[in-house]
Length: 263
Image 1: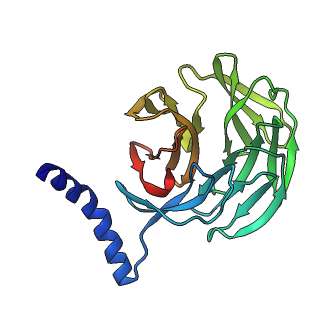
Image 2: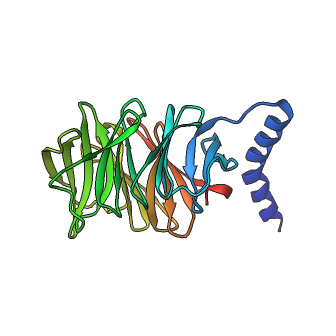
């Protein structure tokens, strides 16, 4: 019993002490970004690496989300909400029903959205969604992730049979620029700035860089979804509600289990 209390005192002491100090001093805990929990609530993710605490819900009923330090974008059943840096809704756009995948540009602004149930791709044109027609988009070939590059380029990770392909296209015309096979990458993935890819591989989370080097972390549950939290952070959400925060920088990667409200 003594060993159990010794363990708990050390595991819980740091986050509890931080919370008490913030409450007593009026200080705000650092915020690294925002996560969408298993119930569809959008919550701020507070704390420091290794000691995170999800805050109270800002939105309910989110089907998908992506965030950057400058704002975010959230999909409800039939709308896309564009959020400013204070997470206030700056625009509401009508959109196809169901889930969504979002791409943010280098400045963190919404660049593109893919709606799986409709198998349709759109680019953000100011406060409007403009449909992008592309021959690579077919209902039988699901898009698993999207990203935005400079020069109006959209990247799509498309599943074709048992293979995953990276398709690069022009956002305004839908013209295909290139197609590259992604060997060994699963369909649960995120396309990261700088060309890195984060993906789930069975009982592991993996980060593959452009030079094909990989960093891997053990996981306690299969991952079903990866979404940008903000900056260098990605949220990994398992099918049973457990979740992790993955930080990918230019030369390192770190994985942290999330407690409480991000389950």
